[in-house]
Length: 124
Image (cartoon, rainbow, N blue to C red; front, side, top):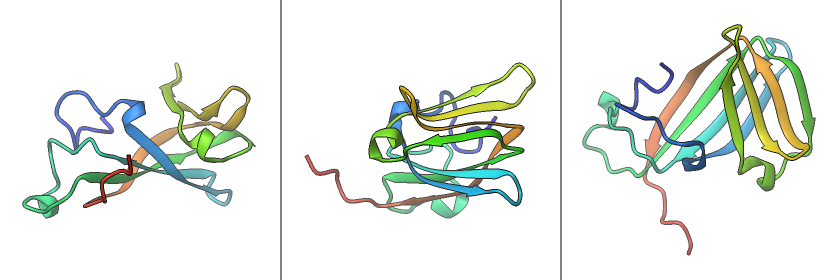
């Protein structure tokens, strides 16, 4: 499971994760999407134990990307995302919605990189 390394039980819900980075690599037909969440891992990496942090930053690497399309990318589209499993075992990805954002299918997905850090409290 994608989240098994970080969480026991349920993974953070999509509304708990904020996508903030997208890198498209046409050479390897891959897309990397960066997220952050304040949902702290229940299974912290050994290097993180005992540290002072409140945010998890992670990057998902999608391989074998096809049917890629983009129609505007802004903070509005970055606020919504959905990743679903297809019947063939691949994944479908939508960043945004209502006719705008980024959409694609991929053969596989994995966590490429993750780190924790202490972020300033959100302005309220």
